[in-house]
Image 1 (tube, rainbow, N blue to C red):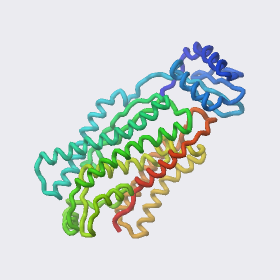
Image 2: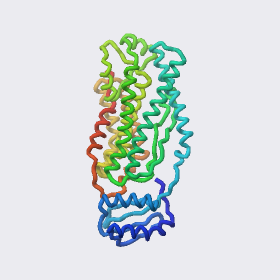
Image 3: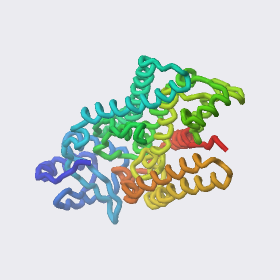
Image 4: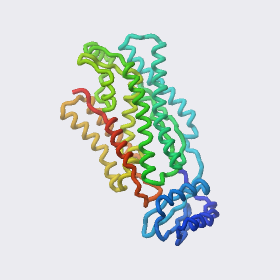
Length: 385
């Protein structure tokens, strides 16, 4: 978030105090600090009134306000500086590069499909790679536009989205680190925070599911014997785990015990999107799942939950080994545990800042229900014993 001290805040302070007075808010003391101003109040500002003040102060005075708990309630005023982040300034270069790296990943996925179907023509190969690039990028952007929609309805200032490139699948990655937006002002209420966290995953899951349904019908079906032969040659790789939603999707196209479905690039888009969504729903730091869970519990409880996530994922991987599942399922969960541990160490240990109003106790019950449903549908389920 881009805040910095400006003398203009002192010049605006008289008008702000008059605004508080007209709203019937008694300010007992004004404390001037180098980078902010604290207004000590006689009693907390009612949540709905504070949200109106929060919006007005931001729009008319370029000031972000926080209502903090203490011996007496304090409204902290911090100047907001409209400054683009470094990544956002380079958004077109980053996004264009991401399209290229995603395309090479799509090319690798499409090449694997041609080994199964025998369609070696360059036109089919390029078409499948282009479809993968288009729909994978679309699913990522739909996720971020979900955040944008909810953020702007809540009066937040946001930047983005920006697609982030990564090495393609030929180098062991997926061509992108995903897409991001920058929320430059904090949500005012817990309800807004929950909606902000859930909106992206719900929009992204909806897009990925539609893409997956189409991809399911485009995916070729081969015999179990043919699949075993291709696996032995290294031309086909078994999927050790799949999200529950992806497994349910396969019931749209029932197979006999002697048949195997080979993922079309569009179905692989859904496979990857469900995995990304599951990681994003983990209650760590300011991930989407962190927003939703933090809206429902206190900071101390949230920090405890966040610290347990890596151990739970790694423990699940170990439990799968003892239960007789494949090494692939073990490696999958261990990998998730390592990723979650890195995320926790990088930005999860600081917890979550919560909302601008520490006195707000609003809830979003349907957000919690939607969060749990999304977490269940994207949870990786071991497939191969």
